[in-house]
Image (cartoon, rainbow, N blue to C red):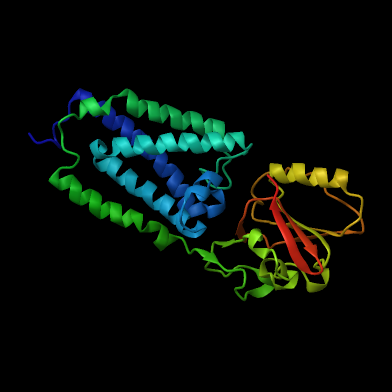
Length: 306
């Protein structure tokens, strides 16, 4: 009887725990693959990645799916990387909870999962893997058998490529499209307001695609916000309470969250305040809110308000 077929009670329980963890991991990976965008990546993951946002997003999904394949076909080889990954998830979720995030983004944009709840689920799955002591159950057995090694390599490579096959990717805001809408084949745009500093406000396509030239302020404040963003709710309420009408304020609403519950209730108001919106359905990868300061037609500062 070979190592692959010899299942004992001591080794079947760790295999079950690993496969349960893999099933949950697959759920999050598939949500990101078919319904998500890089804006759902936790800030800690983005900060730690040496790659750009688009590549980071694809690699996260690819690694998760490949690990799921190995966990299903050969739990013996997957328990340690799966445990380490869930432990890293716990660190990420703690950072999100401390930052006041309302949702971890693990299940896409429409399913709100508080970081504390996801932390509990991941923690139970991690304890389930470690509690079965797989290092003892599989002591002396090889990581792979001849058959499982080939199957894991073939299927792992296939699912690893899935993000590049399924996700159309980002489009530049400079892409010529009617009314500033994203190209039909693209799922999202990546905005980086920090790179706008020093540029003429009219030369920033992310703004000029959605705001008429005559409405762009040459002096004043541009605020990027979302209706479902708790940080935006607090920031806009603070702006309203502190606003003395001394400078023009342009509020640009990013309408890529229309399936989520709107929480923003108050805004600065008055003749000095104008409001514009990006087209509904164009997913924009940027955390909100942002304050973009303009003087003499040039962006002088761009600050993320978190």
